[in-house]
Image (cartoon, rainbow, N blue to C red; front, side):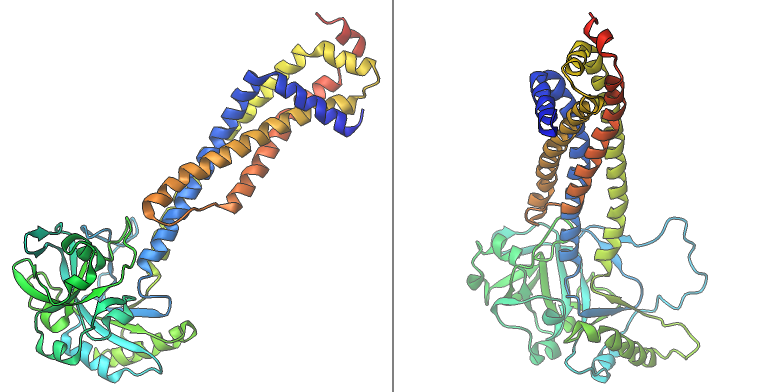
Amino acid sequence: MTLFDTFSLAFRTIKGNRLRTGITVAIIAFGIMALIGIITAIEAMNKSLRESFSSMGANAFSIRFKESRVNFGGGDDVKKSKRGQKKEKKSALGKPIRREEAELFKQAYYFPGAAVSMYQRGGGGWEVQFKDKKTNPNINVWGGDENYLQVNGYQLSHGRNFNSMDVQTGRNVCVIGSSLVNKLFKSKPESALDQVIKLGSIPYRVIGVLKEKGSSAFLRQDDVVVTTYTNSRRLPNASSSYLLGVLVADVKQLDVATDQATAVFRGIRKTTPIEESNFVIEKSDKFAELFIGFLSSITGSAGAIGLITLIGAAIGLMNIMLVAVNERTREVGLIKAIGGKRKDVRLQFLFESMIISILGAIFGIILGVLVGNIFGLVLDTGFIIPWFWVGIGIVICSVVGLLAGIYPAMKAAKLNPIVALRYE
């Protein structure tokens, strides 16, 4: 028998036992679907996290008086900490950055091609009203300067940016996010300009509208009102500390710019050479890396789920192949009687096992990608195919099929043709 004849016979045998084949393929497909589906969903969340948290761009960093808190969707702040980690008895952090210090840094810091912004959080959970229309109480307010939009990755779609007069006087002017335009102005950004909205009970004139930045399930970057920091400090929920943002022209210059900013601000904060810095410098992709690290543990869990399911599938496949050997004893005897060799019988049963496993892999991968991309639709990340894990899934299923078929194939190959032909 040629190799093709052996493969063809194995395929016809599988096709003739559709119910048994279908059940086995379904078991394997479920394991691969669990693995690929969870991995695809994690890939979608990773992509959404990178787009959400890297809002300032890869060539930017911020200066804060302490390590920042991570805010999901404008809810309660969750402090980044490790379980069991002890707090330091004496920490240099905790002293808010005063307005005078921030303004002095902005004046003193110079780096070729860099833009510097000072800004202040005006609080979250605001409700914005225009005439009889209101938003949900989930609007974030920030107070910035003329460089705030550039440093934080925002762009204007209509209107103008803050000018020096706006910053100096602290008058009630603002720039609003695209989601506010959709809710208050029927998705017509040009109609929002020069209109007066109310932030709580405080009136603000809209001077600009931001381009959509891509709100996600993790961050609502378009649910924002930006005013000047000289205005935001009057708000009741305004932060007691100012922040500084620096955007450099080239990402390769980021480390040098960071070191220079550290040196300048240490002098402003009056720290001696032997003291630790009483502020932190955070790069824009810090939070993306932080939460992607959290999601990596889920990847391990997904692998464990898929592996356990595939082990069960391998055991089931081996049992089915052993039953097939007993049922087809006369067939094996006939093959040997007409000249078939042991390796032909062995290859036939191995081919059957491998074909069933690979069919399970194909169906499982297709279902897993479709199920996992439901998260992609929710998070608006586009269609994602984890090619690396698709390859791993095929390899795993091939190994499962090989291991599950070796013993039944060897058992069938060892059958005595005379005894096999007399088997009832």
